Length: 182
Image 1 (cartoon, rainbow, N blue to C red):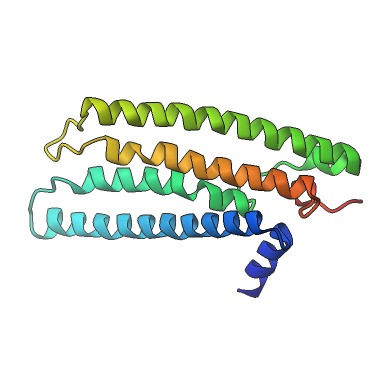
Image 2 (image 1 turned 120 degrees about the vertical axis):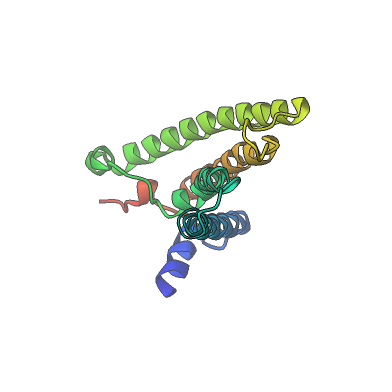
């Protein structure tokens, strides 16, 4: 636990905004993990009902799919905060510290812009499902605005984390790409 708290400390310093975003990202990671765990339990229950009780499952498959997609979207900011994405840092390693800094600002800004577009269209899609009363084409007939709500929420949280990463690099609280100067 000490290494995780020291990692967060090194990325946030005493900056209140960065600490709040780190806490939100950590919470979203826990929520995401809970959703994955819940989907595992539902899958086990579904297997039991189908193969032991020889019963029908109505909602389980759809619920597991929605939980896994939502867990992925809600977990994005945590993965970004821990730099858990696949990184190819050969170019940043080869760059001078100044160029690495500029490249980091560029990539974080571009990533933020792309995710902001995804927030917009995710919200638009969610709102369309909500206003039109869309439901799934299954017996369960889930109101689709409920699982689609993960789109604007997940991408908004990811955007917030990207902005925090950008602020941390600009304020020199965190090193560009997590790489210290040569």
